[in-house]
Amino acid sequence: MKKLFLLALGCCLLAQSAQAADDTVRKVGGEQIKGTVKSLAKDKIVVEKSGKDETLKPFEVESIRFGDEPAKSVSIRTQISNGGYENALNVLEQIDPGTLERAETKQEMQYLKAYCNAQLALGGGVDLAVAGKQMIDFIRANPDSYHFYAANELLGDMLTAAGKYENAATYYKALAESPFDEYKMRAGVALGRARVSEKKYPEAQQEFETALAAADQSSGPSAEATKQAARIGLATCLAETGKPEKGIELIDEVLAKLPAEEVDLHARAYVAQGNCYRKMPDHAKAALIAFLHVDKLYFSNAQAHAEALWNLAPLFFEIGKQDRAAQVTQLLKERYPNSPWAKL
Image 1 (spheres, helix red, strand yellow):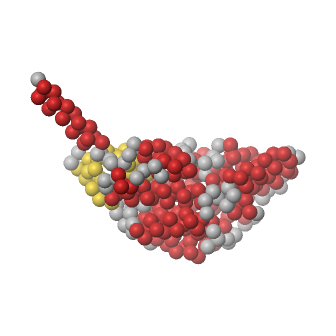
Image 2 (cartoon, one colour):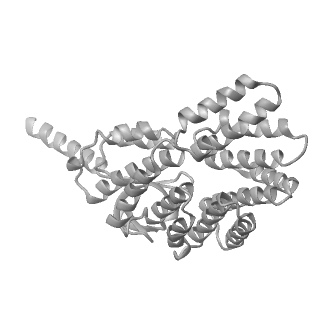
Image 3 (cartoon, helix red, strand yellow):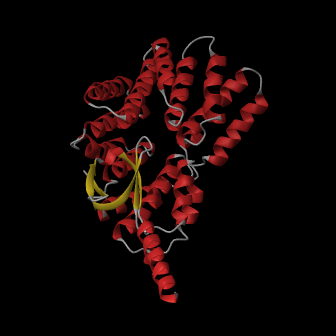
């Protein structure tokens, strides 16, 4: 009887161990694949499930949780999805890389640290140069990572935020030269945003229109999100080139299609909407409401939130609410001290 008990216990422990070793790949759109990640590269990911291989493109993958990750990694990913990058970093610092068995898992933890710092830097909470160096170090150490394109895009975004537009274009080029239309579209959107930051609106409009043309060759949730991002950017350009009414029409179409979970795009859309209304006479109230959407609902996007706060101050002042104007200005400087919007 004792032997049978020990045998059963051993089988149970083996089953638990096998289950714990499963990798979990979460695809864009929410579908999960539980199995074993057999190979990772910047252009493809191979997952074995029930004896069969499934090959995924990196833009199809939202995240990978490796089987040997500590239980704390669940909290890290939850914090990241909610925009709690500082909290995620605090948990990441508690993980000793020496306790991780697989090189892929160590690489994943390294990227998550760089990713969180990049997001904080883009929001004005962390020095851009420090966060940028961390991302450069990741790219150089892991040139074939499945995060390769996302890392280059983030590095380009940080350089754009620092005003180093030509350097940013170098990193966006990695996406433009990828074999995937989805990344070519994202490169166009990223370059368009950089040109908007330079106030080169005709050039930005051309980039966004090129990205939209590439959308005809792509499908799926990732491509659709990039398509809507390009349309939001195009609306901004229309506002800045004397066609804010057309920009409003475009934003209304985008907001009607955006899924609720696309929080970042909602934030960008309402900022663009507010900017369009600010270009139109007697539409201060509509602009105020648009920017308040970001402040109250979509503040997890730090870049959009900082821009919204900067716009809210004069709008509140205009309607005689000087106290609210002072409050949003103070919030901008306290929460996003390194943001360009806090320095204007």
